[in-house]
Image (cartoon, rainbow, N blue to C red; front, side, top):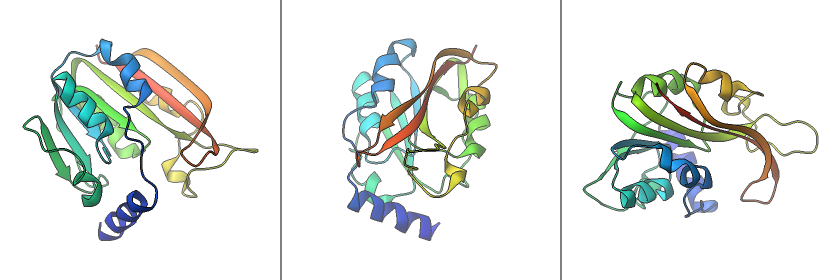
Length: 184
């Protein structure tokens, strides 16, 4: 855990993360009942702050104490500093789960179980890319395969799914998968 924490703290220091809400979350928030939310790998809180302003109570989880220190203090935000490789999500608790630019396959089935009936997951992260695209990391364990995200949430009502070419913060072309799904 200490190595991961150090690596993520350095990453936040060297590469400032976006401060604006995820466009995917902002576009599909109308499908969500305001209530309890989980922001997985919340970073400095761009999505957490947006949700708090809308009236959600949020569990904001990250391994980086540096990033969590930048999440504003609020009675509606519960900051949780933990290693997501060991963390377990409470079942049947959330109206919304947000997972942007992070992949931990162990948590995917827990996310489905953690949603209340009618709860929504907003999930977006990188896909293994070939050709002239750049990989955001050299560890393929943290990259989706083609259609993997869609298949991971089969059984839920898929509101939106797309795999596309995008540009990351360094201006590199990357492949991204985006999904919005509701538990029925």
